[in-house]
Length: 294
Picture 1 (tube, rainbow, N blue to C red):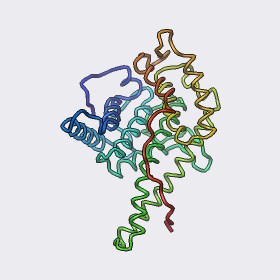
Picture 2: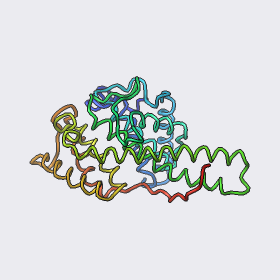
Picture 3: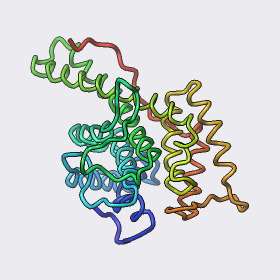
Picture 4: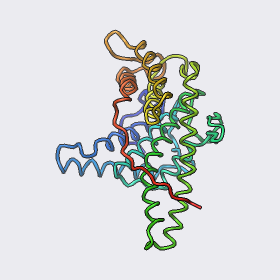
């Protein structure tokens, strides 16, 4: 699953051995239609599909990856979720089965009815260092990205159901998929509400106790997710985390971690992406039209 010959970096040891793979896929997806020429765009597309194939080949039945060990590997698992769904939105060959397994592991530990994360996860799940901030923010980001993919899928299945010429078998399959999307939508709503409630607790926001790269990455995940929801929850969080991050800035304008991931490049990037979440591009998704799945 590696895409680099570099081994044993601070990021790999702290948030997962294959973090480079997941970040590479995210970057390549976001570069779609921004390359200098047609040849470069073709190469970008081929590399994107190559990494997707690597991930699909190595994904386990629980949605995680053997050997992706780390102090808090749930954070790289969250990056994988974001990358896979982002690649799908960018037109890459990401199968429904891969996304379904990924979304299933993100919903592990989520109490949909109670709109809270229980903290209990299945055996073999990625490690979290016992920090709920890491787990909840990562799962929320993955669930939110999958929600964006499902908006497009939902419209496609609705068109099949409404098409009088569509074979009965296709209509039945579309109805089944629409039911799955309904379940995923309820989980997305519950996850957003759960984290929106949690961020009001300063102990939750403190994470490990002081700011490391893991905290900055978690803040970014929360900001980019709550911004999609908007409203008071987003406004309150944005004001709160802006104060927190501004207070942690170094005199030279950078940010550095006080534990685990301490590197200034990573921490500064995470801090800036959190501060600029209100200006970041959001996924373009079609509005879904209500169609009964009875």
